[in-house]
Image (cartoon, rainbow, N blue to C red; front, side):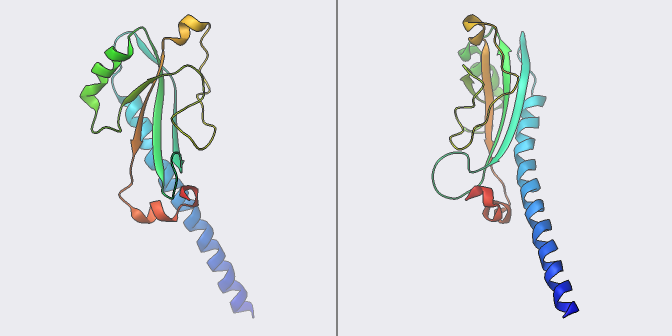
Length: 152
């Protein structure tokens, strides 16, 4: 009886360790997106205000993990100027996407209530200076994608 209890306990511990490993690994994929955005040279007269990374089922229907990294910047440049600048860093259509940020809420994420904690324009005119630069990522490890319960 004692051997059965030990065996069940070890299986339970193994499941917990696997669950934590999967979550941490998927979070790290999203964190790498955020770090890449943070390490990219900024255009002149631009400052980083905040950043975020998220992994899970973030948009759309069905199952599957999604990875998201973003920075919130403040600049006097226009969206077109930013788009032209960040075009040199784009690897695909899902990287270095630029949107005007009119509130703290991250609108491109449909599932969940994610926001920038440091978004704090003083007035409406200053809101025009805030932009989010974001990228979506993928994992090359199907096991991580299929076994994370956050993707279902």
